Length: 387
Image (tube, rainbow, N blue to C red):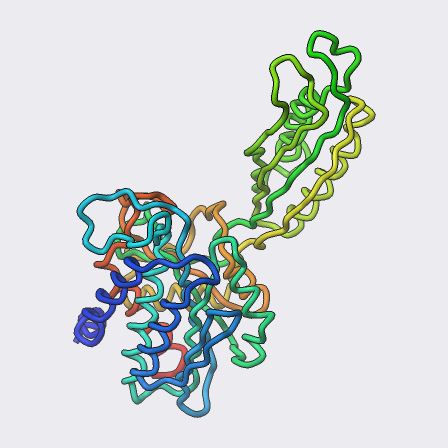
């Protein structure tokens, strides 16, 4: 029997029901109590050993079949603080202001489906850790699980994750060595000057003008400091100053984000922002303090594991449905922390070229790829564990 058809027969209805239930009951980062309990219940029903409470709501289920390789498969469980704007969707969020706008409900359902199929496979030799992670959406759940002993308690020779991808043809898989997604840092710059009457600018040290010059200077980091062959995005997203039309304010605040694919570029950009801030006073008379919130590193696939994942996808789907070389995304993903700690690979699963974008109030996971995603996990494990 075709594997996708086999997965559909063994787990298709269950995956669909679970996906839609989780979508109806979304929970934000580190609040995934219902979701975590549901996942644990399903895994225990399958017969796996389940460890809960990792980084709060995270859990790991282990399928162990004697000597052999040990791999980890990860799914994320948290939703986003977005209000769902779709009429007539029977499984729409029941929690105002919270929805699964990134497909983590689908990721969780696919990994549960794969766990059910693999648990029934007598030919596997080795160990699979099914990792269900909280707080991927800016909560650093992967890092929190690692700090809570994830890889010490459940050591893995390699780890893998998968994310649905609007814009990629439905049912296709994309995975390549090297960058898949960018790093994520946010920053705050406080510019301090001297306030005065707006009609008497010579008596002020104007933080608004200084802030405007600072925004322009920051853009030169990508255009004039960074090698053109390297990718870097530095975007100022907020500017706050003043309360009156006739007052030059005392201070201004800028906020923004930095994203790139290289750790070297990331570190150099942080240093250059600090240098520009330090030089602002000499140029404008206003001081600037830089506060960095270092978020996620870039998601970088190991060459060997990316090849393993691509080969598994090709064995399942055929070469025409597998992309092995493509443009990475500047969006970020905290699976990057696991990839820094353990060799592995991150793949994209297409949900359609016309699908609503991620983090959009109209987004919904494509249920007809649930079996494809679960079958990919089954294929990968069978190839790695010698079945």
